[in-house]
Amino acid sequence: MITNYVQPAVEKQMTRHDNKDLIESLINSKIFQDYEKAFSETTGLPVSLRPVESWQLPHHGKNHENPLCAMLAEKSKSCATCLQMQQQLSESARFEPATVTCQLGLVDTAVPVRLGERLIGFLQTGQVMRKKATPSQIERTARLIAEWGLQMTRERLQSVYFGTKVLSARQYDSMVKLLSIFAEHISVVSNQIVVHRENAESPVIKRAKEFIVENQAEDLSLGQVAKAVNTSTFHFCKMFKKATGVNFTEYVSRVRVEKARNLLLNPNLRISEIAYEVGFQSLTHFNRVFKKITGQSPTDYRAQLAPA
Image (cartoon, rainbow, N blue to C red; front, top):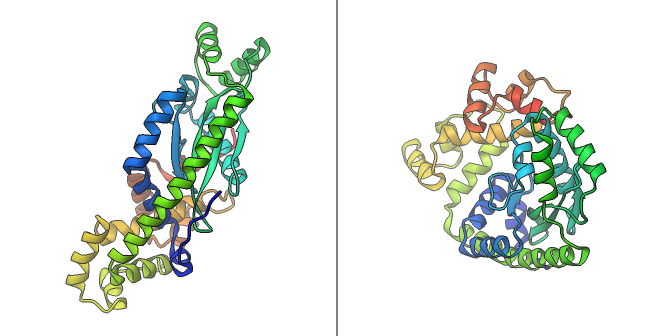
């Protein structure tokens, strides 16, 4: 993997939120959208670009998503199993392309995307088989999807399962090579975006974001942050909304919820502990804000990630 040059100070200052914003910018770039369209139309497979820490199934809702995977994504038990596989793939692909095989015999591959030495995301494809399915695999798949609560006739299962695209080892290796080459191009584009942002973003906003992350567990106020960056409250309020696209309160809430999502992966922490740990003053407020931002309650979010 080619790693482009990034000033060490810039790379060190980048946070998970910066990574997610950067990946979002890359996804919206013309170069990625053109590649995504060409790749999917040529291979018949989905391709996704996702940040390192992602709590969603990367191909769900994408063009050419495997029909069986699409149905599994709608059930909590099967979805949790898929998310666990994605986590395994993320850990395996931190330094080089990696491929994992799910319980149903489908494979997914992730290629690391870097900004200098920093891993910022993965270019990913899959939901394909590397050898034809056998009748015994159908039987095993039928048992698994029944355990996961998915209702499907045997005829429908056979149609979907045997209809899954099969690629030879040579074809699959060539496809991974294409992803690796494009990951290098994305790395170059990401560097250009970061340099532009570093030159464009106000030092005041940069310091404010850093202050919020460092003090998110405290009872932060707009005036407190404005004072920390030596700006009047009125001027800072307008400047912050223009730079981030959201008001101060919503931005702080999103920073706290992001930290909470990570802490919820630890089953030994009570939800009430997590709420206060990230800076919410009441459990009720935490539950309400978490659901507003993620679409799920903290309890449901944790349950979805629990082993099936």
